Length: 425
Image (cartoon, rainbow, N blue to C red; front, side, top):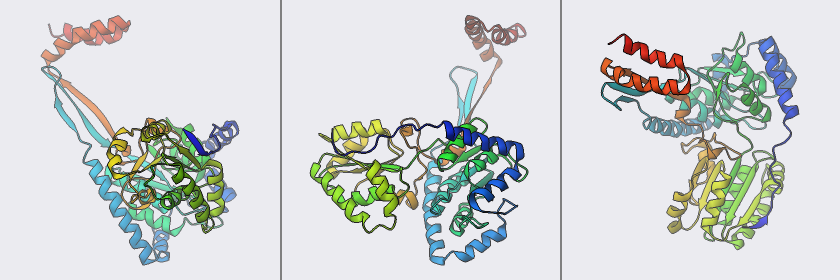
Protein backbone atom coordinates (compact mmCIF):
# COMPACT_ATOMS: atom_id res chain seq x y z
CA UNK A 1 0.00 0.00 0.00
CA UNK A 2 1.52 3.28 -1.14
CA UNK A 3 0.83 6.49 0.78
CA UNK A 4 0.07 9.35 -1.61
CA UNK A 5 -1.10 11.78 1.07
CA UNK A 6 -0.29 10.93 4.68
CA UNK A 7 -2.27 11.95 7.72
CA UNK A 8 -1.53 12.40 11.36
CA UNK A 9 -1.85 9.18 13.32
CA UNK A 10 -4.85 9.19 15.61
CA UNK A 11 -3.80 8.37 19.13
CA UNK A 12 -5.79 7.99 22.30
CA UNK A 13 -5.19 11.39 23.86
CA UNK A 14 -4.47 11.70 27.55
CA UNK A 15 -7.97 11.45 28.95
CA UNK A 16 -7.02 12.01 32.56
CA UNK A 17 -7.88 15.72 32.70
CA UNK A 18 -11.04 15.22 30.64
CA UNK A 19 -12.19 12.29 32.77
CA UNK A 20 -11.62 14.25 35.98
CA UNK A 21 -13.49 17.30 34.66
CA UNK A 22 -16.45 15.18 33.57
CA UNK A 23 -16.51 13.29 36.87
CA UNK A 24 -16.73 16.61 38.70
CA UNK A 25 -19.65 17.68 36.50
CA UNK A 26 -21.50 14.41 37.03
CA UNK A 27 -20.98 14.53 40.80
CA UNK A 28 -22.12 18.15 40.92
CA UNK A 29 -25.34 17.30 39.07
CA UNK A 30 -25.94 14.29 41.31
CA UNK A 31 -25.40 16.38 44.44
CA UNK A 32 -27.01 19.67 43.44
CA UNK A 33 -29.47 18.75 40.71
CA UNK A 34 -31.15 21.59 38.85
CA UNK A 35 -29.05 24.25 40.56
CA UNK A 36 -25.96 22.74 38.96
CA UNK A 37 -27.65 22.54 35.55
CA UNK A 38 -28.78 26.17 35.70
CA UNK A 39 -25.29 27.23 36.77
CA UNK A 40 -23.68 25.34 33.87
CA UNK A 41 -26.17 26.88 31.43
CA UNK A 42 -25.24 30.33 32.70
CA UNK A 43 -21.51 29.64 32.71
CA UNK A 44 -21.15 27.88 29.37
CA UNK A 45 -23.98 29.30 27.25
CA UNK A 46 -24.83 32.61 28.95
CA UNK A 47 -28.36 31.28 29.42
CA UNK A 48 -30.29 32.34 32.53
CA UNK A 49 -33.48 30.34 32.07
CA UNK A 50 -34.76 28.68 35.23
CA UNK A 51 -37.23 26.21 33.71
CA UNK A 52 -35.24 23.74 31.65
CA UNK A 53 -38.16 22.06 29.89
CA UNK A 54 -39.19 23.78 26.67
CA UNK A 55 -42.85 24.78 26.69
CA UNK A 56 -45.40 24.18 23.96
CA UNK A 57 -45.51 27.93 23.44
CA UNK A 58 -41.77 28.01 22.72
CA UNK A 59 -42.19 25.22 20.18
CA UNK A 60 -45.00 27.11 18.45
CA UNK A 61 -42.81 30.23 18.38
CA UNK A 62 -40.10 28.16 16.73
CA UNK A 63 -42.52 27.05 13.99
CA UNK A 64 -43.25 30.72 13.30
CA UNK A 65 -39.53 31.33 12.72
CA UNK A 66 -39.04 28.45 10.27
CA UNK A 67 -39.97 29.05 6.64
CA UNK A 68 -42.58 26.88 4.94
CA UNK A 69 -39.97 25.56 2.52
CA UNK A 70 -37.64 24.56 5.38
CA UNK A 71 -40.51 22.91 7.22
CA UNK A 72 -41.49 21.02 4.08
CA UNK A 73 -37.90 19.81 3.69
CA UNK A 74 -37.80 18.62 7.31
CA UNK A 75 -41.07 16.74 6.86
CA UNK A 76 -39.91 15.10 3.63
CA UNK A 77 -36.73 13.87 5.28
CA UNK A 78 -38.75 12.70 8.29
CA UNK A 79 -41.06 10.69 6.04
CA UNK A 80 -38.13 8.78 4.50
CA UNK A 81 -36.53 8.15 7.88
CA UNK A 82 -39.82 6.91 9.33
CA UNK A 83 -40.54 4.65 6.36
CA UNK A 84 -37.15 2.95 6.67
CA UNK A 85 -37.44 2.65 10.46
CA UNK A 86 -40.85 1.01 10.07
CA UNK A 87 -39.44 -1.41 7.51
CA UNK A 88 -36.59 -2.25 9.87
CA UNK A 89 -39.01 -2.88 12.72
CA UNK A 90 -40.81 -5.33 10.49
CA UNK A 91 -37.69 -7.52 10.45
CA UNK A 92 -37.70 -7.83 14.26
CA UNK A 93 -40.36 -10.14 15.62
CA UNK A 94 -41.44 -12.30 18.51
CA UNK A 95 -40.57 -15.96 18.79
CA UNK A 96 -43.18 -18.28 20.29
CA UNK A 97 -43.56 -21.96 21.10
CA UNK A 98 -40.06 -23.12 20.22
CA UNK A 99 -39.54 -26.55 21.78
CA UNK A 100 -36.03 -28.05 22.09
CA UNK A 101 -37.55 -31.08 23.86
CA UNK A 102 -41.09 -32.33 24.60
CA UNK A 103 -42.89 -30.19 27.18
CA UNK A 104 -40.44 -27.25 27.02
CA UNK A 105 -41.77 -24.06 25.47
CA UNK A 106 -39.33 -21.24 24.78
CA UNK A 107 -39.71 -17.87 23.14
CA UNK A 108 -38.88 -14.20 23.20
CA UNK A 109 -40.74 -10.93 23.23
CA UNK A 110 -39.51 -7.70 21.64
CA UNK A 111 -40.14 -4.88 24.11
CA UNK A 112 -39.33 -1.18 23.61
CA UNK A 113 -37.41 0.58 26.34
CA UNK A 114 -39.74 2.73 28.43
CA UNK A 115 -37.80 5.98 28.10
CA UNK A 116 -34.92 7.51 26.21
CA UNK A 117 -33.08 10.79 25.77
CA UNK A 118 -32.05 11.97 22.31
CA UNK A 119 -28.97 14.17 22.64
CA UNK A 120 -28.95 16.68 19.77
CA UNK A 121 -25.71 18.69 19.51
CA UNK A 122 -25.74 22.45 19.10
CA UNK A 123 -22.20 23.71 18.78
CA UNK A 124 -21.34 25.69 15.67
CA UNK A 125 -24.27 24.40 13.62
CA UNK A 126 -27.93 23.61 14.40
CA UNK A 127 -27.87 19.85 13.75
CA UNK A 128 -31.63 19.50 13.47
CA UNK A 129 -31.24 16.46 11.22
CA UNK A 130 -29.99 14.55 14.26
CA UNK A 131 -33.30 15.21 16.03
CA UNK A 132 -35.05 13.32 13.22
CA UNK A 133 -32.48 10.52 13.19
CA UNK A 134 -32.92 9.84 16.90
CA UNK A 135 -36.52 10.69 17.69
CA UNK A 136 -38.21 8.95 14.76
CA UNK A 137 -36.72 5.45 15.31
CA UNK A 138 -37.56 5.76 19.03
CA UNK A 139 -41.17 6.60 18.20
CA UNK A 140 -41.45 3.82 15.61
CA UNK A 141 -40.00 1.38 18.16
CA UNK A 142 -42.79 2.32 20.58
CA UNK A 143 -40.85 4.11 23.32
CA UNK A 144 -43.44 5.56 25.70
CA UNK A 145 -41.42 8.54 26.90
CA UNK A 146 -39.10 10.15 24.36
CA UNK A 147 -37.13 13.10 25.65
CA UNK A 148 -34.54 15.26 23.94
CA UNK A 149 -32.05 17.90 24.94
CA UNK A 150 -29.88 20.38 23.13
CA UNK A 151 -27.77 23.39 24.11
CA UNK A 152 -29.31 26.81 23.63
CA UNK A 153 -27.97 29.33 21.16
CA UNK A 154 -25.22 31.03 23.15
CA UNK A 155 -26.38 34.21 24.83
CA UNK A 156 -30.07 33.29 24.55
CA UNK A 157 -32.56 31.12 26.43
CA UNK A 158 -33.71 29.14 23.38
CA UNK A 159 -32.71 26.13 21.33
CA UNK A 160 -32.35 26.87 17.61
CA UNK A 161 -35.86 27.04 16.08
CA UNK A 162 -35.11 24.47 13.35
CA UNK A 163 -33.91 22.03 15.99
CA UNK A 164 -37.07 22.56 18.06
CA UNK A 165 -39.28 22.08 15.03
CA UNK A 166 -37.42 18.93 13.98
CA UNK A 167 -37.76 17.53 17.51
CA UNK A 168 -41.50 18.15 17.37
CA UNK A 169 -41.85 16.64 13.88
CA UNK A 170 -39.94 13.59 15.13
CA UNK A 171 -42.56 13.08 17.84
CA UNK A 172 -40.44 13.84 20.89
CA UNK A 173 -42.52 14.23 24.04
CA UNK A 174 -40.26 16.32 26.29
CA UNK A 175 -37.59 18.81 25.22
CA UNK A 176 -35.01 20.35 27.56
CA UNK A 177 -32.70 23.31 27.00
CA UNK A 178 -29.52 21.79 28.34
CA UNK A 179 -26.40 20.29 26.77
CA UNK A 180 -22.94 19.01 27.60
CA UNK A 181 -21.80 16.43 30.11
CA UNK A 182 -24.23 17.92 32.62
CA UNK A 183 -27.17 16.91 30.41
CA UNK A 184 -25.94 13.31 30.27
CA UNK A 185 -25.64 13.31 34.06
CA UNK A 186 -29.13 14.76 34.51
CA UNK A 187 -30.82 12.16 32.31
CA UNK A 188 -28.79 9.39 33.94
CA UNK A 189 -29.40 10.28 37.60
CA UNK A 190 -32.36 12.64 37.46
CA UNK A 191 -33.09 16.03 39.02
CA UNK A 192 -36.27 17.71 40.21
CA UNK A 193 -36.96 19.01 36.72
CA UNK A 194 -35.62 16.06 34.73
CA UNK A 195 -36.74 12.50 35.34
CA UNK A 196 -34.02 9.97 34.43
CA UNK A 197 -34.31 7.74 31.36
CA UNK A 198 -33.35 4.18 30.50
CA UNK A 199 -31.31 4.95 27.37
CA UNK A 200 -29.33 7.91 26.00
CA UNK A 201 -28.52 8.11 22.29
CA UNK A 202 -26.86 10.66 20.06
CA UNK A 203 -23.51 12.25 19.25
CA UNK A 204 -21.72 15.04 21.08
CA UNK A 205 -18.37 16.61 21.81
CA UNK A 206 -15.64 14.93 23.86
CA UNK A 207 -17.27 16.03 27.14
CA UNK A 208 -20.57 14.44 26.13
CA UNK A 209 -18.79 11.31 24.95
CA UNK A 210 -16.85 10.96 28.18
CA UNK A 211 -20.01 11.52 30.23
CA UNK A 212 -21.77 8.76 28.32
CA UNK A 213 -18.81 6.50 29.00
CA UNK A 214 -18.88 7.25 32.74
CA UNK A 215 -22.67 7.03 33.11
CA UNK A 216 -22.98 3.77 31.16
CA UNK A 217 -24.37 1.13 33.47
CA UNK A 218 -26.55 3.59 35.32
CA UNK A 219 -28.11 4.29 31.93
CA UNK A 220 -27.91 2.53 28.59
CA UNK A 221 -26.14 4.23 25.68
CA UNK A 222 -25.93 3.62 21.95
CA UNK A 223 -22.11 3.69 21.76
CA UNK A 224 -19.14 5.94 22.45
CA UNK A 225 -18.43 7.92 19.28
CA UNK A 226 -15.49 10.02 18.17
CA UNK A 227 -14.86 12.41 15.26
CA UNK A 228 -16.71 11.79 12.01
CA UNK A 229 -14.98 9.83 9.23
CA UNK A 230 -15.48 8.62 5.67
CA UNK A 231 -13.48 6.07 3.71
CA UNK A 232 -13.84 5.88 -0.08
CA UNK A 233 -12.83 2.82 -2.10
CA UNK A 234 -12.34 3.91 -5.70
CA UNK A 235 -10.84 2.73 -8.96
CA UNK A 236 -9.83 4.69 -12.03
CA UNK A 237 -13.45 5.01 -13.18
CA UNK A 238 -14.40 7.33 -10.31
CA UNK A 239 -14.91 11.08 -10.66
CA UNK A 240 -12.25 12.92 -8.61
CA UNK A 241 -14.43 16.02 -8.16
CA UNK A 242 -17.25 13.99 -6.63
CA UNK A 243 -14.91 12.20 -4.26
CA UNK A 244 -13.24 15.48 -3.28
CA UNK A 245 -16.65 16.98 -2.46
CA UNK A 246 -17.52 13.98 -0.31
CA UNK A 247 -14.22 14.24 1.56
CA UNK A 248 -14.79 17.92 2.29
CA UNK A 249 -18.34 17.25 3.45
CA UNK A 250 -16.80 15.17 6.23
CA UNK A 251 -13.87 17.51 6.80
CA UNK A 252 -16.08 20.49 7.60
CA UNK A 253 -17.63 18.69 10.59
CA UNK A 254 -14.68 19.60 12.77
CA UNK A 255 -10.90 19.82 12.70
CA UNK A 256 -10.54 16.24 13.90
CA UNK A 257 -12.78 14.70 11.20
CA UNK A 258 -11.18 12.31 8.72
CA UNK A 259 -11.53 11.81 4.98
CA UNK A 260 -9.71 8.80 3.54
CA UNK A 261 -9.44 7.38 0.02
CA UNK A 262 -8.10 3.95 -0.88
CA UNK A 263 -7.77 3.76 -4.64
CA UNK A 264 -6.16 1.50 -7.19
CA UNK A 265 -5.36 4.52 -9.39
CA UNK A 266 -2.54 6.88 -8.47
CA UNK A 267 -3.73 9.21 -11.24
CA UNK A 268 -7.13 9.43 -9.55
CA UNK A 269 -5.49 10.04 -6.19
CA UNK A 270 -3.52 13.00 -7.53
CA UNK A 271 -6.62 14.39 -9.24
CA UNK A 272 -8.55 14.19 -5.95
CA UNK A 273 -5.84 16.19 -4.15
CA UNK A 274 -6.00 18.88 -6.84
CA UNK A 275 -9.80 18.99 -6.72
CA UNK A 276 -9.84 19.25 -2.93
CA UNK A 277 -7.62 22.32 -3.11
CA UNK A 278 -9.82 23.95 -5.74
CA UNK A 279 -13.03 23.24 -3.83
CA UNK A 280 -11.58 24.36 -0.51
CA UNK A 281 -10.88 27.82 -1.93
CA UNK A 282 -14.60 28.47 -2.42
CA UNK A 283 -15.94 26.66 0.65
CA UNK A 284 -17.52 28.82 3.35
CA UNK A 285 -16.27 26.40 5.97
CA UNK A 286 -12.73 26.41 4.57
CA UNK A 287 -10.98 27.07 7.87
CA UNK A 288 -12.31 23.95 9.58
CA UNK A 289 -12.32 21.79 6.45
CA UNK A 290 -8.75 22.72 5.50
CA UNK A 291 -7.43 22.01 8.99
CA UNK A 292 -9.16 18.63 8.97
CA UNK A 293 -7.97 17.76 5.47
CA UNK A 294 -4.40 18.88 6.09
CA UNK A 295 -4.13 16.92 9.33
CA UNK A 296 -6.30 13.87 8.76
CA UNK A 297 -7.01 13.67 5.04
CA UNK A 298 -5.33 10.62 3.58
CA UNK A 299 -4.97 8.98 0.18
CA UNK A 300 -3.58 5.48 -0.18
CA UNK A 301 -2.79 3.57 -3.37
CA UNK A 302 -3.73 -0.10 -3.24
CA UNK A 303 -2.33 -2.77 -5.58
CA UNK A 304 -5.85 -4.00 -6.31
CA UNK A 305 -9.42 -3.83 -5.01
CA UNK A 306 -8.85 -6.89 -2.84
CA UNK A 307 -6.18 -5.00 -0.91
CA UNK A 308 -8.45 -1.95 -0.69
CA UNK A 309 -11.26 -4.07 0.76
CA UNK A 310 -8.94 -5.69 3.30
CA UNK A 311 -7.79 -2.25 4.46
CA UNK A 312 -11.38 -1.02 4.78
CA UNK A 313 -12.39 -4.06 6.81
CA UNK A 314 -9.50 -3.47 9.19
CA UNK A 315 -10.21 0.26 9.47
CA UNK A 316 -13.99 -0.23 10.00
CA UNK A 317 -15.03 3.31 9.00
CA UNK A 318 -18.14 5.16 10.08
CA UNK A 319 -19.11 5.90 6.46
CA UNK A 320 -17.88 3.72 3.61
CA UNK A 321 -18.29 4.70 -0.03
CA UNK A 322 -17.70 2.25 -2.87
CA UNK A 323 -17.05 4.05 -6.15
CA UNK A 324 -15.81 1.44 -8.62
CA UNK A 325 -16.76 0.08 -12.03
CA UNK A 326 -20.25 -1.41 -11.95
CA UNK A 327 -18.99 -4.87 -12.86
CA UNK A 328 -16.76 -4.81 -9.74
CA UNK A 329 -19.43 -3.61 -7.29
CA UNK A 330 -20.94 -6.95 -6.27
CA UNK A 331 -17.63 -8.61 -5.47
CA UNK A 332 -16.39 -5.61 -3.51
CA UNK A 333 -19.61 -5.17 -1.54
CA UNK A 334 -19.89 -8.87 -0.68
CA UNK A 335 -16.37 -8.79 0.79
CA UNK A 336 -16.98 -5.75 3.02
CA UNK A 337 -17.93 -6.60 6.62
CA UNK A 338 -16.97 -3.65 8.87
CA UNK A 339 -18.65 -0.28 8.38
CA UNK A 340 -21.25 1.94 9.98
CA UNK A 341 -23.16 2.63 6.77
CA UNK A 342 -22.39 1.76 3.15
CA UNK A 343 -22.88 4.03 0.11
CA UNK A 344 -22.71 2.27 -3.24
CA UNK A 345 -21.80 3.99 -6.50
CA UNK A 346 -20.96 7.53 -7.52
CA UNK A 347 -24.63 8.58 -7.44
CA UNK A 348 -24.89 7.75 -3.74
CA UNK A 349 -23.42 10.59 -1.75
CA UNK A 350 -22.76 10.01 1.93
CA UNK A 351 -24.55 13.30 2.66
CA UNK A 352 -27.79 11.80 1.32
CA UNK A 353 -27.70 9.44 4.28
CA UNK A 354 -26.80 12.33 6.57
CA UNK A 355 -30.07 14.05 5.85
CA UNK A 356 -32.86 12.50 3.88
CA UNK A 357 -32.56 9.10 2.20
CA UNK A 358 -33.83 7.24 5.28
CA UNK A 359 -30.88 5.41 6.83
CA UNK A 360 -29.53 6.72 10.13
CA UNK A 361 -26.54 9.03 10.42
CA UNK A 362 -25.73 8.26 14.06
CA UNK A 363 -22.98 5.73 13.44
CA UNK A 364 -19.97 4.08 15.14
CA UNK A 365 -16.53 5.64 14.68
CA UNK A 366 -12.90 4.89 15.51
CA UNK A 367 -13.20 1.20 14.61
CA UNK A 368 -16.35 0.53 16.64
CA UNK A 369 -18.01 -0.75 13.46
CA UNK A 370 -16.09 -3.98 14.07
CA UNK A 371 -18.60 -4.82 16.80
CA UNK A 372 -21.66 -2.60 16.40
CA UNK A 373 -23.83 -0.94 13.82
CA UNK A 374 -25.40 2.49 14.05
CA UNK A 375 -28.54 3.71 15.74
CA UNK A 376 -31.66 2.07 14.30
CA UNK A 377 -35.12 1.15 15.49
CA UNK A 378 -33.64 -1.92 17.19
CA UNK A 379 -31.50 0.33 19.41
CA UNK A 380 -34.69 1.09 21.32
CA UNK A 381 -35.91 -2.53 21.51
CA UNK A 382 -35.08 -5.31 23.98
CA UNK A 383 -35.33 -8.99 23.04
CA UNK A 384 -36.41 -10.74 26.25
CA UNK A 385 -36.68 -14.52 26.49
CA UNK A 386 -39.21 -16.62 28.41
CA UNK A 387 -39.89 -20.30 29.05
CA UNK A 388 -42.49 -22.68 30.45
CA UNK A 389 -42.31 -26.42 31.22
CA UNK A 390 -44.72 -29.26 31.84
CA UNK A 391 -44.16 -31.58 34.80
CA UNK A 392 -42.77 -34.41 32.63
CA UNK A 393 -40.37 -31.95 30.98
CA UNK A 394 -39.26 -30.68 34.39
CA UNK A 395 -38.64 -34.23 35.65
CA UNK A 396 -36.66 -34.95 32.51
CA UNK A 397 -34.35 -31.91 32.64
CA UNK A 398 -33.91 -31.55 36.45
CA UNK A 399 -31.37 -34.42 36.82
CA UNK A 400 -29.25 -32.93 34.01
CA UNK A 401 -29.30 -29.51 35.65
CA UNK A 402 -28.49 -31.05 39.05
CA UNK A 403 -25.45 -32.83 37.62
CA UNK A 404 -24.20 -29.70 35.86
CA UNK A 405 -24.69 -27.51 38.96
CA UNK A 406 -22.94 -29.97 41.28
CA UNK A 407 -20.10 -30.14 38.77
CA UNK A 408 -19.63 -26.42 39.26
CA UNK A 409 -19.93 -26.68 43.03
CA UNK A 410 -23.16 -24.63 43.14
CA UNK A 411 -25.16 -26.81 45.47
CA UNK A 412 -28.00 -24.30 45.88
CA UNK A 413 -28.54 -24.42 42.13
CA UNK A 414 -28.58 -28.21 42.23
CA UNK A 415 -31.07 -28.27 45.13
CA UNK A 416 -33.43 -25.94 43.25
CA UNK A 417 -33.67 -28.66 40.61
CA UNK A 418 -33.62 -31.65 42.98
CA UNK A 419 -36.40 -30.38 45.25
CA UNK A 420 -38.78 -30.41 42.32
CA UNK A 421 -37.94 -34.05 41.67
CA UNK A 422 -38.44 -34.92 45.35
CA UNK A 423 -41.86 -33.25 45.47
CA UNK A 424 -43.08 -35.09 42.37
CA UNK A 425 -42.05 -38.72 43.01
